Length: 245
Image (cartoon, rainbow, N blue to C red):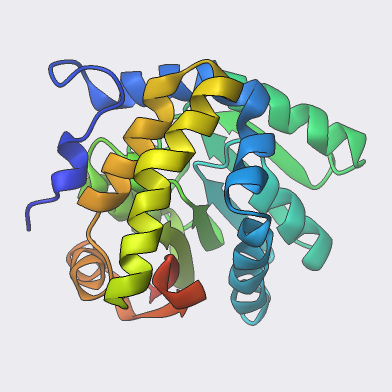
């Protein structure tokens, strides 16, 4: 199945997507958390908590948070599941540095380990983790299927993956409002505050190109996951996808 999102890149159509994504997140790392909460009006926190509620239900002892960024999901997960050991993986050193400071400030360094690495070539043995989580990260993969296969590889048999990602609102009216906000308002705010105008233009374009709902479940199945399903969040702004190894 063709994934148009792989062709959407932050800066140049010719250069490697992963390298551009790494550069983009390094550029906006210092403002990333502020902008995330501002542009989503704080709703992104509840979306992550909804994922964590589902994750908590399988009582994982070890969790890999892929594309962890500044560690928001990892930190919220650690507070909700205090006995779990969490590993955060990200391709942006700038984002990881911000995350490590946040983790240290909240005295969670013994529970969360941050690692620089490629989500499509993870530095972990097969069958390592009880669960894998991702929040707004798979859309940025250079090769979506390869990244999902890596998540499957590092999961223990019977382990589950929980993926929070933007989707397309099913209501035509709300989809129009959503797309207008993403296309016109968000890039202006992002340009003023992050000094990287292309980063938030890329956000709109990557959301539009990303496969959602049944199309994404099909790619998860191709990657080796079973019992795949999704839960729509806030009228379809985003969805939580769940699969099992």
